[in-house]
Image (cartoon, rainbow, N blue to C red):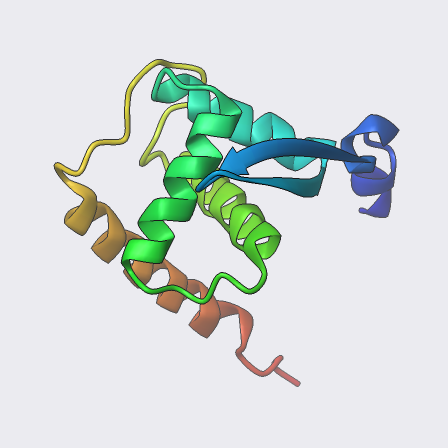
Length: 128
């Protein structure tokens, strides 16, 4: 099993730093190339640059009063959730289909149900 993970292209886990301006302040974000690739895919869907996507996520998370003390963790979780939605066939990869507000409540509800089901499945005690 480990070969599946350690045999991946080493470039994926190398970190890269990007600078961008948010609220007039230049900031740097350091993520592994894997996450930059996923952010690029999400940005492609909505026809924006990665910097525009990150800025939009920053402002939207601020509007909902999320704790932004670790914004890079937030971005990693966004990437993971996006890939999970793809794996669950809620979204399709590599297409320019913006993720609009329409249907988000149903999408979130379905995601929450699947998350709870997975947690129940993976936290069961093994049979002896």
